[in-house]
Amino acid sequence: MDRFYATGKRKTAIARVWIYPGTGEVIVNGKPYQEYFSDHIVAGDVIFAPFKLTGLEGKFDVKCTVQGGGKSAQAEAIRHGISKALIEYSADLRPVLKKAGFLTRDPRVKERKKYGLRGARRGQQYSKR
Image (tube, rainbow, N blue to C red):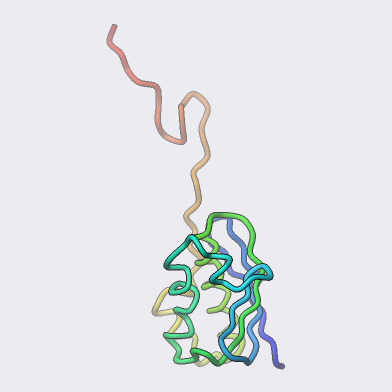
C-alpha cells in the first residue's frame, strides 16, 4: 500500500490526513501549509514534529483536509493525524510517538454555559446593598 490514512482531532478541529512517499510537501485544504498557516508562525514546527522525532523528514508528502477550531488547534489535529498515519506505515514508531504524547487525543474542550450563571462558571457579581 502506498498511501496511509488517519484522522486527527483537537478540540473541535478535525483533520483527515493522507501520507505517501514523496519529498516532504504538505498540502492543507488544497494550499501549501505556508500559505494556509501564513498568520500562524509555529504551525510548521507543530506539523513536522512527528517526522523530526522519527527521523523521516522529507520522506513523505502530506495531503490533508481540516475543518473546525482555530489555526492552532488545526495544526495540532494535523500533527495527531500524521502521527497516527505513521503508525499505519510502521508499528515500530509507536513507542517513540507515544512517549512524545503525539498519539493522545487532547480531550480538553470548552465547557458549556450553565443556566443561572453568566458563563460556564462565573456567577453574578455579589453586592451587599
